Length: 153
Image (tube, rainbow, N blue to C red; front, side, top):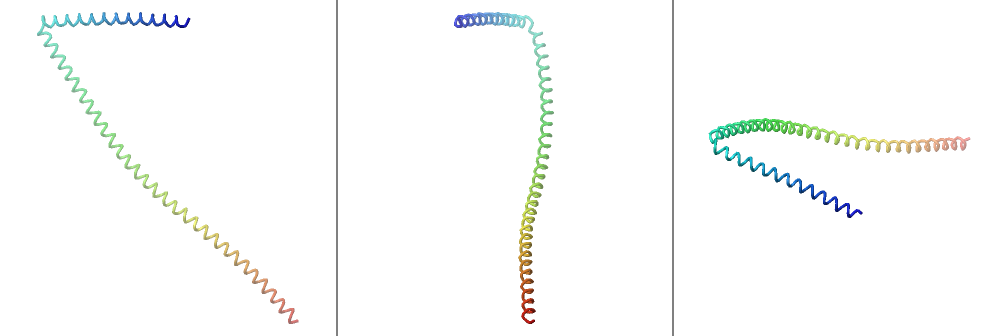
């Protein structure tokens, strides 16, 4: 059944964990033995240990200086990049300002075109009205002339 499989799986996991725990305990015991041997060695050979310790200290100090030098180089590069970014940001701001000025100018020109189209449309309507009045006046004049010619004959 699934319960039995789950129980068996849990038991297997528990056994595996117990084995791992035993391995870790062995490693800890080995390390403790190494440390104990090292302490005994230190007591027997303090001068050699002192030289070795000084050597390790010098190596660590050199490594620290190297790391500090690398960090300084990185900080310098970072400062250069930050300055480049500031310069680019100023250029972008200038370009955006110019673009805004151009857009404003284009909007004004667009508004002027709309106004001129409206004025042109009004003039065309005025011309059409005048043309109609002119035609009516011509027709009226022609009728008047015909009536005068017909009435006088």
